[in-house]
Structures are given as C-alpha cells and as structure tokens.
Length: 469
Image (tube, rainbow, N blue to C red; front, side, top):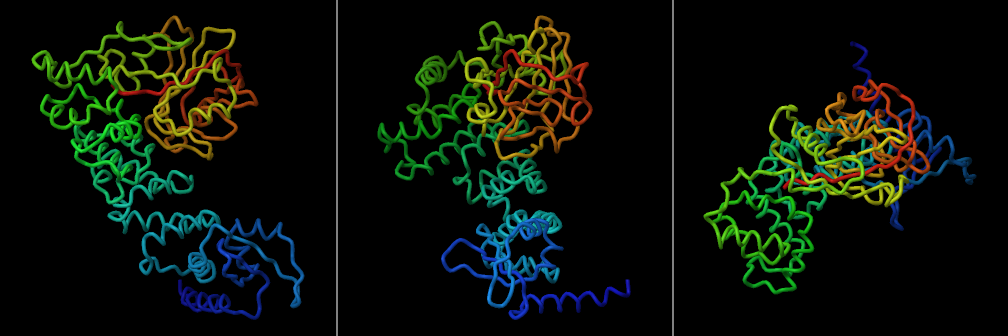
C-alpha cells in the first residue's frame, strides 16, 4: 500500500524513543551479574508487544522515586546484549540477523520464548533452518537440547528429528558429537528409521565413551583394568543396543575383541565361542531366528503372545507378517511394586524412551496401553512423533480381539506433565493424586479404542522399555 512509505519513518522515531534517557516510566534489570545493565523503556510499548512483560507490569509494584512513580522489573535469565537486540525489534521491528553469530541467534530465540514473542520465535526458527543448516548440523548437541527443552521450538525439533532419521552420519561426524548427551545418543540409535551398520555404531560409541574419559588411551593395548571398568560404566547403556551377532567374524575380531573386557561376561564368553572358537557354526548375518518359547516376560498383565503382537505394531507390520524383531520388554515400573503416583512415574521413567505402558482395568479383563518412542519428561507439553500408538484388548485371554490406533495428529502424540503419568495426547491419560484415575477419550488425536469415555480405575499398570536385540 502507498501508506507503507510512512512505516520506516515511524520505526526510526520509535527507535529514537528507545534511546531517550529522559522520559521513561519503567526500568528493566537484565542479567545476573553484579554489574547488570539497567534499560530504560516505556510501559505502553512493552505492554503492546510482549504478553509476558504485560503480565509482569500488571502485577508489579510501582516504586516511588524522586522523579515520580517508576516500575522496575528483573529479567535475570537474559543477557544484556541479547536484550538490547530484542528491544530494537520491539520498538522498531528491526533485527538484522545476518549481522549476528548463529550462537547469538539461538540466545535471541531462547530469550524471545521467555518474553513470549511468538512472531519472533517463528521467524528465528525459519531463518535458522533456511540459512544456517550447516551450522546446526555441526552443533547438533546444542540444537537438540534447545529444541527439546522448549515446546515453542517445534520447527527446530522437527529439523532434529528429520536429521536423526535421514542423515544420522552428519550427527556422528559433527564437531560436537562427543558432547552429545547419553540420552540423545540412545534416542538417535533407537530411532525407528535409524540406518547405520552395527560396527559403525560400535566404533562411534567407543569414540564417544573414550572422549568422556580423556585419561583412557585410544589404543586398547595401553588400557589398564581400571580403564576398561571406567569405559564399561560409561557405555553400559549402549552395549545392549549393538547387534553383535550381526557382525562378521573379522569385524568382531578386529574391532570388538580388543575391548572384550567392557562387555558383560556372559555375552563376552558367548561371542568368543561363536566368533573365534566355533566360527564355522556362526549363522549368517541377519538370519538369526528368535524363538518365542525360549523367552520370558516379567509381567502380571500380558503374555509373550502380546509381546509378539506389539512387536509387529512397532515395526508397522501386518498381523499376518512374520515377526522381524521380537523386542525385549524390560520392566522398569510396576504400580503394585513401585507405586501409582505421578511423582514415582517421573522419578523412574523420565528420560526413558521407547516405552510401552500397559494398564489392567479394575474389575474387568480389559487391557489398555500405548507406545511412546520419545523420552518422557516433567517439563510439560506435547511430544511430536509419527510412531506412537494406543491399543486395547477387551479380554486379555483373547489377543485377537484388539483395537489398534496410531496417532493421527503427530504434534500431540504424547503429553508430559508433572502431575500426570504416561499420557497419549488427551486420548489416554493417567492423572489423579494417586495415579488411579484414567480417562480414555476419542477422536482428538487417536481414534477411539474403547466404547465408552467413562473414567476408570486401575488394578495394575506396568511400563516396559523396548530393547532391540
């Protein structure tokens, strides 16, 4: 429009107001060090631009100063130089991102989230994805932590998820690979679409583990018994994720055997027997048959037949397909043993990914459940995944009579809250002071798995972590 020619001048005038040190009705203390910077600002503009500041201003107490009433607020989590950049956006709508380091843009994004500047949050994420992809791939650890610690950063979270799925080698080859958290690496390796050979995963895990303990030599022949014990403690969560039996004899002898002391003794002895003592009897890679009758499951609710069916659902197989992976169901929580409270759930299950929640409905033979490939947390908000599902068995004795519902709205696949147990969208939710009150709705983010929406009580519930073998 023709009137738009006035906007640049208006923007400049507002920026000049920002620099005015004479007329102001609010001061903002930014930062947490003893030499914080005090910004002078104007209540009307901040009220209009930031709902977060508006809430603070509406509840703040005016302090009487010599020059009249003045409101003083504190923002200890925002650096002064970052807040100065945000003020220029608030007053003048100007933020030349090309002038800033990418790390500063991340800081601006985090500060914008605290101030609830939604327009800026979206703009910053899109700018990073469109212009700083290489930097984000090389600094994946920072990006992953930032995106999954804040539910406002869905675009960055989707970027991380897609990179983990399609190009994991970029993460393993990034400059901060050794700085990745254990939970992040486990989530990456267990991602359903993860594509990397087991020997590559083993080598990267060794690299990561040794980097966490700089005193350990990269040459296993120079490692002491204490060094191997330390490395074992560092990598114990990763070892069950490696399919050692799918390695070739040369891969095992050259890459794994020198580090045999960090493997559990039973596994180590069996691998040595299969690969070294009796190599001719070793099955070809990828052809090991898993026999249900040789397995067991520690459950008071489900049987191995349920395990087989759920394993097919996880792999997105048809009911008539042959099982590719009969996953190990590792019990991590049982209500009757550990308690039914939400606090106990979060104590045990926070940061645990790839979990199956199984619920036995009180005074019935009905079983309900859900699969969450993402880690649970207490920070609140929804989890994004295409791979979650919920299900029901009308009668635990008849596994053919089931209802399976895969997530329909991926942005609301799971729900995390400090006062709730395992929850899937708003469709299957455990809440209540003692964790006994469940609700099972329909049509929101999953299709209905029950004929009624009535609340129900829980006789028993169990949570298993799904492990690949």
